[in-house]
Image (cartoon, rainbow, N blue to C red; front, side, top):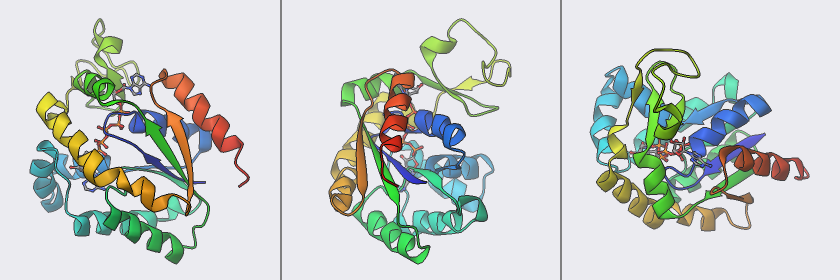
Length: 217
Ligand code: AP5
């Protein structure tokens, strides 16, 4: 199954993608994770991307399109994927549509996760991740523990540089102006499943799996 998980920053795309990847046995391709990994390794791409990401702006399309083209051509993506973070504007949407045709991928499902901006600001200011395994948490889940519940690493929680309130609001503004119109681009062309992202994590996953099961794919 070929899935695009779509929605505002902080709506829960990464959280759900990690659950779905094990339930559906298809890889999670996150453009944000690819860029953060490049930044941590201080590659040329990573160093350029880091300043842009920390400011909450979008990395240029030519860079992102190159990354996506390389990744989706990999053998591990041949039988399906959960694409998280791409496309982020109409130009990227048109490019990926063409790429799907080239790769003969027809049955694409867009999961559109939805939540309001104030919930998102609250989720992102409270988000922490484990440096060792990358698992995402809300600060409430880890406030009384020092070891990661996923990999048991000690004292390894960190906050992303772009999870400061002013940067979050900039990311949300870009989402509304540039990214949200991507849904209009795909409307009537691809299957779009609207998902209530305000429910608890498990309920969101169940909602997604039920809607996927009901598809005639
Ligand atoms: P990226 O990493 O893609 O960030 P994003 O889209 O802004 O999304 P986030 O990772 O912040 O949020 P999420 O929806 O995954 O939420 P999460 O599950 O963590 O991109 C980062 C940057 O890279 C961009 O700003 C840009 O610079 C660059 N970039 C990437 N792709 C690009 C592209 N295509 N073009 C150009 N530039 C690009 O959840 C958030 C928090 O909420 C967590 O704490 C979680 O525990 C909690 N939570 C999740 N679900 C629930 C729930 N149901 N109820 C309560 N809490 C919940």
